[in-house]
Length: 424
Ligand SMILES: Cc1cc2nc3c(=O)[nH]c(=O)nc-3n(C[C@H](O)[C@H](O)[C@H](O)COP(=O)(O)OP(=O)(O)OC[C@H]3O[C@@H](n4cnc5c(N)ncnc54)[C@H](O)[C@@H]3O)c2cc1C
Image (tube, rainbow, N blue to C red):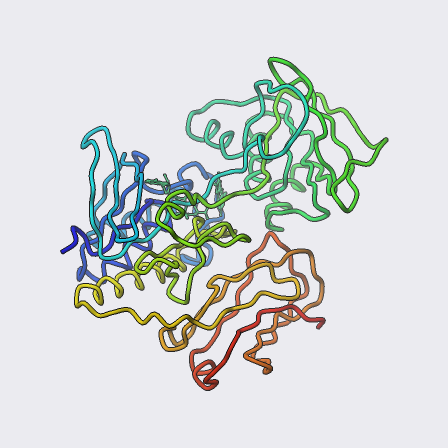
């Protein structure tokens, strides 16, 4: 007997939605373990609006969106362990965690859902020459300082990287009275959503310098200036294009990485592209009964998709726990691989068993560059079953296709499912 039918690790939007779904209207015992004192995850520091347009058809702030899911989880009877850090998950679902109040605990689960979110890529990953002065922050750290601690990281700001958090912080710092000189982006396109470029940069007259990077940070104890240069198509600075920007703060918004230490320790296979677990149609990882969802699985653009995905993972984890209690062996047949081709960077899930998939299954993905006037195509064997026209596709925005179980079942012996882009 397990202590809980399902244990969810992480109480952000993914964990809350997964736990609510896993509860199965009171049928199962579900525990969420969260290292913070509060539920809601990173959304607690995202005080701007724009969350929940898809889920609630309303514009909510991050904390409001999180509060709605917390209420749903509490009403569903989910249990919580807050201020508790999970240290290890074993392949046989023993979760080891530690807290000041209860010390070290080992709790067993029928099924486990990984929902630990992601973290920001730090300066160390960037190789910028210069000293290590104060005044260099990740955009998320600056967001926490401003929105939660009530502290201003600086007054004259340069932002490197045009991911959504960087764009949002350009606006936030401006609204708080700082001057944002520019946002420099290494790639020839922004890594953020179009709506954030318009609402956070264009509306405030903040320049976005595409194909530019920071080549030097000046200042010994505190940042005094940064040097920004244009780069060629290989990301190499072009001589003679360097320009000095006096500033006291450099914010980095240069990518998010799934929090995969626990996943790795549990023996879960990780994708080299997403850096999150490889999953099947039920969002189950390579370790039976361990599921993943949200930013720990792949970095999402909109939290609404996180909630949808987590609901599917929680439902599947609940069903797995039921089967486990009844001692039903899991069908170990490998699913049909989903292959990303022709500008599609990856897909989640990476394999599908038609027998186990729901009637309709959403496959999410990102593209690897900017593509105009394309069709998103899905091939089952040689046969094209989906051709969805898109005027523009960008890496910053997640895309999806919906596969039908009947289409897959109608093709026994199918060896692969290909998601690709074609000229429209
Ligand atoms: C800095 C930052 C700012 C963002 N801003 C925006 C935005 O403005 N708009 C937007 O749409 N999206 C934003 N996002 C994306 C947004 O965070 C996601 O859409 C969503 O929050 C992901 O939900 P999640 O539950 O997967 O992860 P999170 O919200 O990160 O939640 C993960 C939870 O797991 C907990 N956890 C991790 N490891 C452990 C452990 N070992 N033990 C116990 N608990 C653990 C964490 O404390 C956290 O509460 C931002 C992301 C980041 C990182």
